[in-house]
Length: 226
Length: 348
Image (tube, one colour):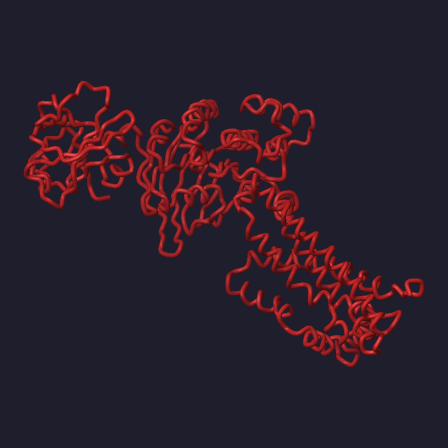
């Protein structure tokens, strides 16, 4: 069967996960950085809102997204008129993955930023260093292990996303099919062999990702032992 | 005066009131932990913002709540050495020092200044090293070099020796003192260690519960601390309630004894203090019978605890500290203390 395998779901999953991973990384890091500076109450409220997608069932997230970007909704119709359609397209997959994976990146980054020794930033300020220098050359490098771990986790989450994705972009072979929606589809069609194949692909991927998280964490420990 | 500070800041139930001036010398701020020492430094550096007040450095207003002036830390030209040195962990020694030279674009000048700094602070050959690989003393010198190449107008040292092993401390204090004397600008050094303050600082302020007193000459702070807190912070072990009886007599009711003092007795006197080192069996003045109760051996000194015959039971034992090399063979029956060592103290 290998000769006739259609690898589209894998490439599509990877494409969606990579693009959404990039968005999540930028917004998650920025969100965590600015949230850390907010007053306590506001930070608490923001935390709840931003972490909600982590605990809500993904199908509920997908449903909520449909309520917002569905083509019959005001925003969805407006975006559609601009040529951006989030329903039944791979961008929709990106949107679903961003929403679901964001809390992981945000939470992990915030933990990393909160563990940062603020005296380093103060020392930079008293030496006259600019805020951007302090952010890019001191804060970010000092937090990079945590940020990287957050990225890997949210990338993995995006790669395996099923619930919100299936609500928003369904399953169209060759257009919106991802690994996870393909597994479900093949199982429904009683194609156990096909399902098993994609499950194996998924297992291999997830294992590699978890191993890389472990390696990162061990590296982090070694560094802090100094 | 080079530095003028008059600030107030409330943090929860803590209330900092700091008001002092200092010149081109090393001024110590002595206080227990939690007394607001670091907060004072942070306000001067601009890391924390006082609620009210003014900070003026060489006629340059750094902060003035009335005129709404609040210079950013990077505009203040104030060097701050943190307790943990705050070296940037992802840069090597050379890059850390060069961070203090960010304003200099000329590569040649940067290289030359870095070379000189490495040599001067005993860091030759360590430029490429990761800062985590350095010893505590080396880290301190990198922090100092990084600050000094930045040419600050004022230097703030926050417990600079507390992260070091005891045997290194004295050595580094000597070399730091040399650097600071050459620096010739005002230096504020925060510490909870009276030895450190005594060795390093020509003047000293005492900070307790957010209230700053002084600065006064360090020498006189130790010889006549004036307040109970200052006496405790400078290591006075024997403090007991006292009231004046006559021009130069202090009566200590809990010891049942009246002492003559040659230090002026202020009206508000509430206690007297006698340092454990200053009891003397051959002293003729303030000489009273004593009864020894217990003792403690230290490597080079002996601590003996005694009581006066009329001492009330609640009053703690009195400490006498003598060098072991002394000729003392037997515990004396009488101990005297010179009137210049009987320190009149007020509550605060």
